[in-house]
Length: 406
View (cartoon, rainbow, N blue to C red):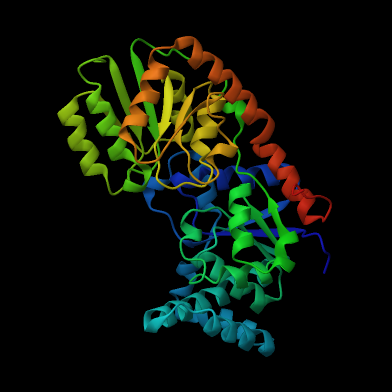
């Protein structure tokens, strides 16, 4: 088998997904490099995740593991094919048992992952794929590791954070790093956490591969309109700091009646945000939107705000910066590798209503600062977070030609 993969399978827990457009872009950019990339997903996405033609197209040609695993004959056929290499099959079973999470529930889930891995292994063999890549390091990476062992096909995975770093021991991050051919870390912060939970002998395989955007999709002047409109794009969830943002906005109602907030996204905090919208009157909820619709909203806004408690390196900040928007974000994880405080935006402590309010007021009162920050941010994304450049870097890593780590 050639060292450089001729056909990759990209796997994740749910694809395509409205909040994971960066994976869709990465796959498209790799295909533009001439690579053959097939997509697979554990679960089929709900209809609301098919937010545009790109997502609909990808869904139509993605292999869905659970759909096959739920058919007894298909499941038996997949594992029967893998049993032709009994050492691999039993080795994968032993690996599954060794890397299970604690308790009976952990054992049952791991057996499910093993069954799913057999389906993926058979899919790899049927398609003639010679490399398996997974986004995120939790359950879908467990399936990936087992399928790789069963099929005799090397694998890699992308480490994002924060969720896949919350329980590194339970998810056996050390074992996954040891067995992977490559680990793509989206930031130096993520790489440092991988170093913390891995053998130093494996550190050379930890490389920096950033999530990215297509800058030209967001560039161009827009009609910002009167007043000062903030934009939030993301899950409506406590982890995103929405309650802090709404409290800060509420304190500004009297002094800044022309200040508004537009929310794009959905999630478990939707009822709270709907109630706040009714109470305050200056919050607009748009729900999930297509990539083109998000880009259009960014051309109308004056600043993007993301007051999260935990993040990796948020792609929505890249999109906003490409749009020429100043950004307000919290100083967590790898955010400072993207946003220069005082240069392309303002970084504030997470959870602080006071600091967030002060940052909003600073931008609202200085249009020239907003403009200059927008220009700095746009150039930063062009240089360091362009998905076409990142795809070339992935191509080079898989060929063993380069590394960003110094």
